[in-house]
Image (cartoon, rainbow over all chains, first blue to last red; front, side, top):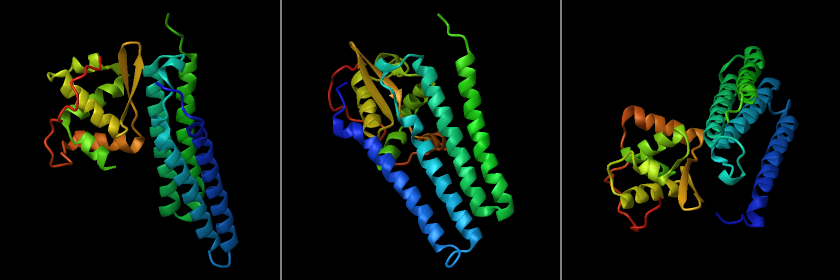
Length: 138
Length: 103
């Protein structure tokens, strides 16, 4: 209803930089500890868990990020439905990715985790493509 | 998080969230689904807004409510709906803070 102050407009950028820093820092830390303090397998699992958690946290927040109705070009109901679908797909995909790296044997997790995440991304892309191909009703 | 539990503990507010899962709705459209006074509905909306589960946007003289739930919050709502769990011991009827009409 009122214009967003510049400080709040910059918040998403600041948050994204913090998350990027955490991901890079975590990767560097895991690399530094491996193989002396962490086995190669454990380092691989930790990295997978870190990436999967990042996906889950971000996907969880997707339905909360609303576009102002005044700026919306399409149907608000369809937009909301799409956001919820993307949020659920990617959260479940990310959770599957994390769980694979935690519980599956390393040689299976190596294949299974990316397959689960890729399947979630594929579902999202299919839904987006279907939306774009659907004729707009007058 | 306790605000979220408080918000979804009430069946009327759960029904509001359920309706908003279908599409954004105006305060009047939502109120038509319930046999309660408009101040009571406004109080329910205020609780949901306070918990960050819905968003209100004013367009002219109408207020449009939209769902603003994360995946985890929706999962909690689904859990509460499935098992009919009342997560707080508080009475379900909120006390209206104002008698203003939102529609």
